[in-house]
Length: 98
View (tube, rainbow, N blue to C red):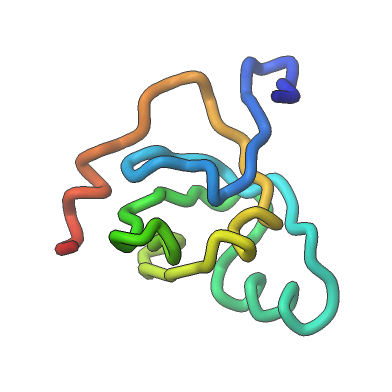
């Protein structure tokens, strides 16, 4: 995976496991869907926490700016996040019921 000089790796939002966090790097979307995601809070440098996945693995819920948002895997694959080489914050994932 690509890394930055700060030991941060870039990966798709959909690759985050429940409890892991990342910061939005960029969106591979254009047009209306890009604008909708920006309106929902998927802005550059915004912290996102993966909360849980449905039993089938799709969709997955994310905590973004205090709001829980569910995205399909293919939508999350187009959102690139930066992640430090640390474990996620399981406490945030356990805050919301499953």
